[in-house]
Amino acid sequence: MMNLSMSISRIFLLITLLMITTVTIAKDEQYLLTEKTYKELSAAQELMEADKNIAAETKLNALLNKTANGSYEMAVVQQTLGYLYSSQEDYKKASELFQLALDSNALPKKVSHDLKYNLAQLLMADEQYNKGIILLKQWLNAESSPPNNAHVLLASAYYRVKNYKQTIEYMRIAIKNEKSVKEVWYQVLLSAYLELQQTKSAIKILETLIVAYPYQKIYWMQLSALYLQQNKEFSALAVKMLAQRLELGDSKTLISLADMYRYLHIPYKSAQILTNAINEGKIKGDLNNLNRLADSWLAARESQKAADVLQQTTELDGSGDADLKYGRVLFELEQWKNAIEPLLKSVQALKDERLGSASLLLGMAQFHVGDLTQAKTQFIKAVAFENERSQAGQWLRHVERLLKDEIINES
Image (cartoon, rainbow, N blue to C red; front, side, top):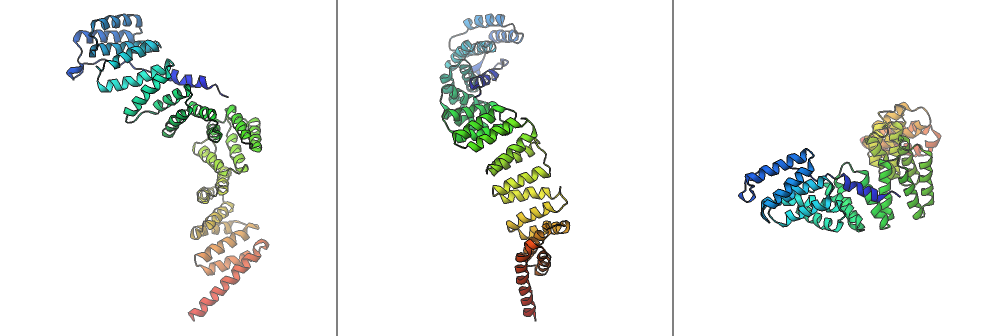
């Protein structure tokens, strides 16, 4: 099992906690700095930007003693001093100063709102998770469009306090809203599912991770272990063998994985793997892989999706096979008119016994659109083939009767 504690720690360490912002004189008189305070703050910030932190700290502490308790000026100095300590990873001191600045209620509403988010991050970085969670939830409730990182941070904090249900809730929100999900997000979600023994959900996450990171052997082993827990010994063995014999990270991994799911009668997952892999350029969208994809959709009873894929194969194959397969699926979808064109192409290209099958299907499609004369021609061709003789003969006799009745009615 992965070292989740290390993974979550990275989340906190990688968060860019704070950015030093230039102090400006506010337009609102309530938030005015005296010229002297403004100059000393600016000088302190210049020292911080030059990495002269000791000098900056001395100047800010001296300035702090000159400001009135509970004033806007004191809150700004506390905030700036908090930035300084946070840049030195002294999160305890930084969080204390931020809290003092917030408690003064002297800062503008927008500044206080942003400072709450920064303070929540600092509290969590200082392993004060419960305090951080309360503050971050307050911030989220007041934020119209919170970034995904806020949900990830909250989910990770909940994991630290072993509230796995809330971990899942907020991590799923982040994953849903993110186009490019980080691997560690899935790892946290997976671990929360495992802690709650929600095996089916954990398997879905592992399947996603295997497709995205096929070179990570641990995910294959975990998936095999979970299949065993569900008494799916054959599936577990198949995954384990696949992981052992394949060069992980190669495109063959995804193809073999898709083949395995189709073999295990999970064709929809097979189709999803192939679709994503082709769209992302991880495997080629060649004739073989498109046929694999079409077969998976057919096995999953998604005939229209299979037809859409097979239409692409007709552009890559001139043997008539692809046209016959495409026409057959359209026929089964009762799209008689659309089926005629590919079936005509297959009849013109095929030379062996498959010509009988193509002729029979084409005749039936033509019959359904009311083209009895052309249907008769195809049924006559199909009768010449042993496998189609009986069925084609029945259709031929039926069409001949209808044509005869038409002649009688016309006369």
